[in-house]
Amino acid sequence: MSPPRVLWYFADPMCSWCWGFSPVIGAIKETYSERIKIALMLGGLRPGTTDPMTPKSRAEILHHWRDVREMTGQAFAFEGALPEGFVYDTEPPSRAVIAVADLNPEAIFPYFKSVQEAFYTKQQDITQAQTLAALAEGHGIDTQKFLERFGSEDMKNKTRTHFQVAREAGVRGFPTIVLQAESGGTLLTHGYRSFDQLKPEIENWLAGPP
Image (cartoon, rainbow, N blue to C red):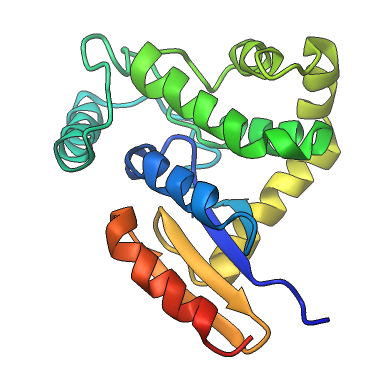
């Protein structure tokens, strides 16, 4: 029996283009999950940031958000977003996704989407453990169990491993999808593309050598 084909989705919860891509990865999962193993790899957009955002960086990021909304139609809450003093550290929400997957592997994609939605449409601070725990509770995960796992050295190490795998794969931006078969890896997309654009390429890949 040949090894399963794998679709690796490299993303970050605080990457606005990944939020724009959310319906696309949802459609890919709905269409292909019985034929392809679909795996999420946390890429690490800005892990370990410690300095608060400057007014200039805030304006630049909100400009990106508007571009994403215009191209994808995804919802954003702009008024009051990224308040003064906000530290754009993408490590905590990434680690939270990995912790949730450790507790319930089936919840990884739904939880990832919940974290994105909380940040972009509800202006919740997803760099904070309690916010992330409350979101995990919405997926049936006990708060105390989540916080213990989230705060563990094991989860911090696993998160660093995710980031390292992304770097070693040559991933420099998100969303990125790499298709893996026994015959080798194929870059499907680096950046946003619609499901209609990606579907024929996935079909061609599935029809190709295992």
